[in-house]
Image (cartoon, rainbow, N blue to C red; front, side, top):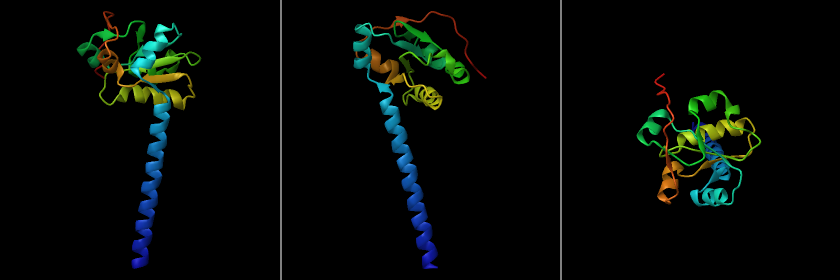
Length: 148
């Protein structure tokens, strides 16, 4: 009986360890594909050719109708269904306003799974950009509230 209990505990410890390693690997990969607001601002100031994509959910955009100048808004649902909306061969940065950056991370993970290598997400999203005092502009293009 004790042997079975020890085996079960050993198996659970091993399973937990493997899950933790996977989580740490995923976090490290996401960090490798992130950029801070300061670094992005510097690159844009040096006229680096970087494509910016606002991938906020429609309700987030409705609440905060601002966008980083030069950004193109792409609804996250469309990006997930058609990854080619973000060019694979160009340096790209995506951002959202989710506290956990879940939308950007979801799109980044999808892009990485499709072997995109030149994509990053803006750490802290639009809020981090604005907190640094970097410019934003009013977003006035009509959009649909996806209620499906």
